[in-house]
Image 1 (cartoon, helix red, strand yellow):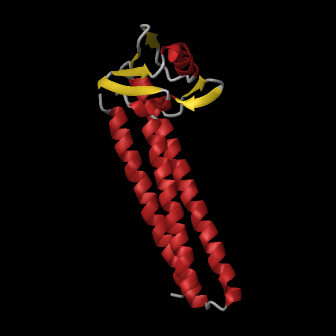
Image 2 (cartoon, one colour):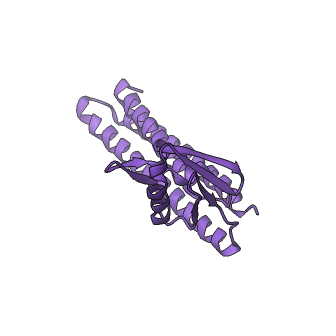
Length: 187
C-alpha cells in the first residue's frame, strides 16, 4: 500500500476515533437515574457578564447515588447557578439553602427509561452517520490519488482498509449503546 493511501486510511482512523469520543460523551450526558456531575457539563452560569461553565464557578460533587451538591466559589453565584440549572431543563429541581445548591435526582419511571433509550439510540445513530461520512470522505480522497499515479489495485486496497475501519467503529458504537441501554434500564 502506498504512503499516500496509508495517510488517508490513518486520517480516517483518527477522525473515527474523534467520532467515537464524541458519541461517548453524548451518551454520558443521558442520565440513567443516578446522579452524575457530568449531567451538568453543558450548563453555563453568568459570571461577571461572561457565560462560564458551571464546573469553573464551583465544585460539583455527588455525595450519594441520588444527590448532586454544588458549592460555588462565591456566595453571590448561588442565584445564577440555580437559575442556570432550572433553564437547562434537566427535569431536576435545585434547592438553594444559602450555602450550597442540592439537586435530588428522582428515580426514573419505566416510560422515562424508554424515552432515554430512544435518545441514546438516536445519539448512537448520529455517531454511525459521522463514521460513514468519514468513510465516504476517505474513499473520495483515495480516488483523487489516481492523479498522483496510484494504481487501481492500491486504491481498492485502501478502500477495503477504510471499510474494515468503518465496520470496526460501527461495532464500537453499538457496544457503547448496549452498555448505555443496560445502564438506563437497570432499576
